[in-house]
Image (cartoon, rainbow over all chains, first blue to last red; front, side, top):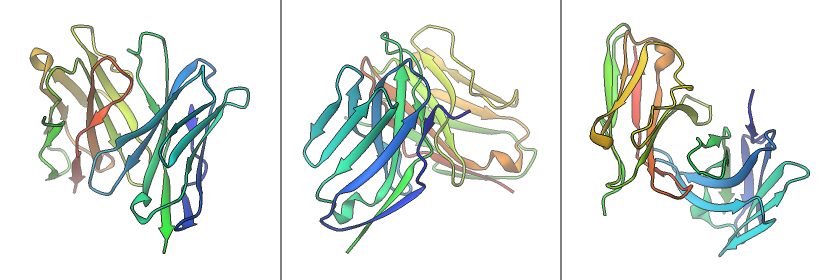
Length: 114
Length: 112
């Protein structure tokens, strides 16, 4: 039973355009959400996060949107660059203590086309 | 400072053999996680250590899998009597007080 779902295994976007990666979750107790980026043969690296008290968090070219009523979040990358080609994992956690484990989705492979 | 390191980076073993995978977390990080990523799959949680608390072993797929963390630092994941379905990349991550986890480069395990 997947609590964090990334339904698109891959996505191709033209360089310079906007990339939108989607993530859905089922656990209404999740209150913190993260996006990680992973290059081949490397471990995932933290990209951006959002708390459930917000609906948007922006960091440079990366913006995460959270729709709690729909249990949906998305990562927007604009403009997309060749170095953005990677696998992106959505992750979620519950619990104010921050001691709870983080649940990851299966990832979406983003290809930025020249 | 140094990040999370894992060894070996690659391990090929015969079915039925035991393997040990090592993780050196970032110094001072109290929480340590093990995940595995099988081909085409996401990050599967295996086990979580937090300080001196009992580890959360809820993700371990079978009793062939075990892990320990000595002195609150280095961790070893042991897989006994390896099976071909154990082939995956095993990732270790550590964190301090925030949510963000810092991942190591992983150990690619191939069971032949």
